[in-house]
Image 1 (cartoon, protein in one colour):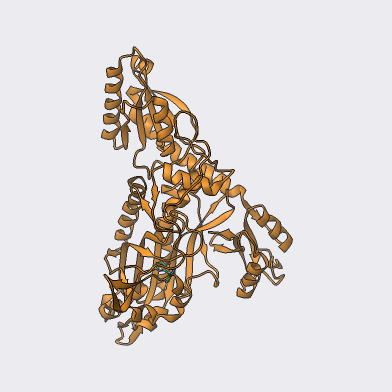
Image 2 (tube, rainbow, N blue to C red):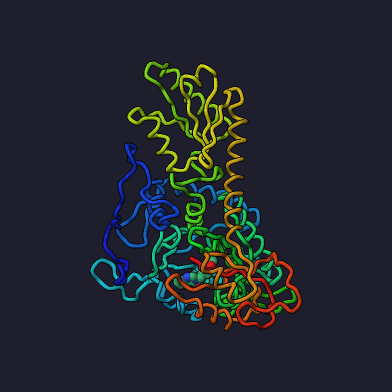
Length: 509
Ligand code: 87F
């Protein structure tokens, strides 16, 4: 049995709902702008992504969410295989001795580790931890498997779940106590190889966000305070949620240096016959990606799914009138789905006869399907269909002769438009500041702040302390790889000392 802490709350999450909209019974009771938190909870449930579970911080991921996860997984898995990374699976459980071997890195995280203490009624002789991440699970075997330089590089990845017993406000996808991720763990004979891989993986993470989820991200390096303490340096892709004015770490790619190699004695004999230590990396992205997607693109009608990750790209809905040729319309819907499917487009028809067309429109809008095709008597007569975009509501009549090319074109446009709009909104939240006063003002306006910084750890601690409050402190998000020019003599916004770099700051998840 899993040992649960005292923070376990009530069973089901009870939420007070306002009047549900009109006759459809489908609407959201909160708007994105007025009550973002409640809006988000409602969207992920009504959009059929998750169901709340009777353990706080744990959620059921429904097929609608898992299909998005699988689309990203298919892309990423193929890309890392091109890089000769191999998949593997290590056990869920960690023995306490191994977990604590790497004290420095585990110390700060210890309160989040969940333990199994019983089997049936009897106490286990030794409690067993559940992996919060797998460094300590995997590296003893790296030590065993790596002997000579011919055993390198060793590049392993696993797709798995991890458990971190978080105490702060749980949020579906964004902060949950169990989540899905991939964790890559690689070992090289040289630092140069490790450095190169860190950036290759980071580029894949950028592509997941920008090309699949249509979310702009910033690539950069974490500060000493914000990096993974067990490693040498941490790179990340950072996204931003305009509604809450918070940055969110999208994925991380770490160069671990030789810290773990030392601790776990991961040594090899190099070409000269000398004993050497490996250089290691680790990298991960998780189901958090899905939460960022919901927050960035969702609207007051529900989810908005980018076509590249949607399980259903086109929903075809018959719109029969009283004395129309209902059978003809249904047949046209089925034929339309067949034509689109044949062309590799993910299309489905909603032929349920116990719901009105209007109800179905709202239902599929809630689920975020990128394109709706309506077929009514007039469309049938004109050998056309009506296409309605989820992202902007635009309606277009399409001749069935050009169906496939037109729909493909529209899906591409939707994908691009989602990215463009998200980028425009994100960019509108970026504020360049030079002084502490400007910084405080921008923070109050929920901005993501680009400021010249002296890059001193104590100064970042000071920024945190000086911005502490109800909304949470500001911290550095990353130092972007793309650096604007830093004129000679520029001062740090927080300390007044000479600035060394431009760094993004803000509140964050
Ligand atoms: C919670 C409990 C115990 C984060 C934890 O980012 C340990 C940890 O080590 C812990 N929360 N971390 C850092 C994870 C670092 C690293 N692991 C492999 C990654 C990428 C994948």
